[in-house]
Image (cartoon, rainbow, N blue to C red):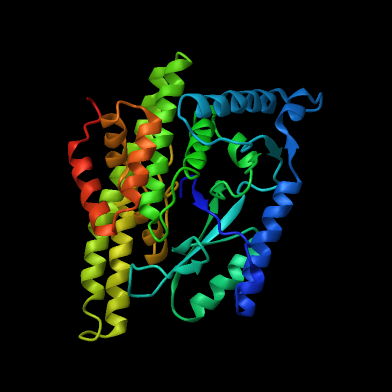
Amino acid sequence: MRQLSQIYPLLLLVTMLNGCTTIGYYSQAAGGHMSLMMSGRPVARVITDNSTSPELRDKLSVSRQAREFAAQRLALPVGDAFDEYVNLDRPWVVVNLVAAPEFSLEPHRWCYPVLGCQAYRGYFNLDDARQEQALFRARGFDTFIGGVTAYSTLGWFDDPLHTGFTSLPEDQMVALMFHELAHRVVYVADDTTFNESFATAVELEGLRLWLSQRGKPEQFQQALNRLARRNQSLALVQDFSARLEALYALRGSVTDDRLRTRKADLLDQLAQAYQQLSADWSGPGPFGPAPITLNNANLALFRQYNQQVPAFRQLLRENNYNFSRFYQAVRKLSEQPEPARVARLAALSKRFDEHL
């Protein structure tokens, strides 16, 4: 799957939590994050270090400019985020575990203090994630583990820059920085779609302005192409998800074996349709290069991201690209009950036109 970010729950008050599994999870979360923080070196020092490669030095120099742009033009609460750099020995910073029942597209949700419930659980250690995955598989769940390029602590900590960022092309690195900083602006418990769609809208519009300032507006089309591929994939997934949900609704009236056979057929058809859809794309799509394997878990994860991006881009447009006013409007929207939020965002989406 494409590069992902996540909101990462950290250890706040372990002594208030009950259960060995819960304490164990929060201990690895806190330990992993603290290890990440303690491994950081000031970006300015890494830039001036003679042993730093020219490629990394250039990326880090761009990151400094992007931080300033985020604070000044995008009104993002940068603080000391991305002021230190961590060299990771892996292509991801954490991995996500997602689990969904065999005959449901509703993912299992883990609940955390303050953050509410989320349809994924992040691990710094892949083996820890696989141990938890095995427990869900033993219960008949579909599961998925995917690498996460970056995560946000919502401003509780000064999140560092790391190789998950700097291994990306320059424009994608900058976009991901804007995305993670946007999570510091607003967070709605139990609404991943709202949170990720908002951050993606800031990422896109921030990148558009950034590239324009640097005299490279034509590169924004590449970002729009990536978004278009995600949207095309999402439409395909939504189509097949409706078929799967109709199938799962038959449980009790047909045998589980029959459901399994039909489920496997639908997932194979979806994989083949995705392969045909992505055959002429210049780069890998959101599910990666073919052949792909799909199940309830990775479909559930994919469906949560980006559905409301056009709505937030329209809201920014209606605030004349004044990011401070836009954030005020988003915070006000976040305080509304979920049905009202969804209705407002649906109305905004209908008004959005990429070419206006």
